[in-house]
Picture 1 (spheres, rainbow, N blue to C red):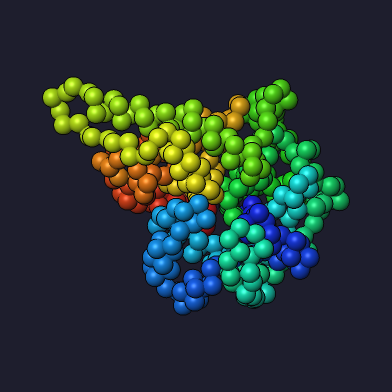
Picture 2: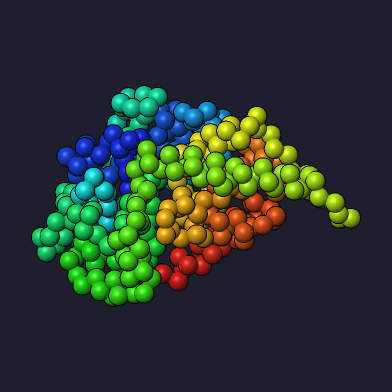
Length: 334
């Protein structure tokens, strides 16, 4: 049994339908759906990389591959727990073995694209535990709030977090988690000046601040240092190819939206310099080609620790090693 945190469409426009019908859902562009149905993964990815997002960005291969995988996960889910936050209420359900349905629709928000929506049947959504208690967002532990909501379309919870979510839903004793020193520290900090950064508008504002105060400034400093250093070794020439720092900031915000707030290398949720947040998960600007420049098409947002681990290594090679780690962990859980 897997546990997913999910949203349903841009600005969650399909959530009311999911709640009413008892489904989980995702969608594809009308022209992309046949490629997914035929299992043409590579063709699907290439076709998505030829288009533009609403922000005018070209999707990278990892982003396009994630879009392909979303439809597969939703259409094939069975016996998995799905959790969705709706304001102050937390809803959950379990997907069933019934086949999915596919419907054409004009999106009511954004670019109002014509899409194919996949609805996968599940049990009736509920905002109560199995013991009848209300699942209210404000009553959740501060640490739990970090992983029981997501800006991404969907996010599978890691094993420990998944076990906590199941215990919460069952109405079980949560003290094995709440008594941990890390959780106690988080709760103490949350009670004094800690503020969640979860809503789309707040995340966007924080992203601008992060870009201006840290990521964009770091890029400028890096290029100045690399191109001005005096050394007998061959130095990498890193050019800043944006018209201004403000233009880079706008590009960073677009990347965060494109990546749905997830690290481009690990898929982990990024943190945006939240007060008392995890520094290693703070977002960091990474050049895909370490020998390349700070320019559109060569940038991605990653976790700080992933950027440090990757260093100047080849991007595709680092991704290959990350996949080895994922595969090993999956085998351990069988």
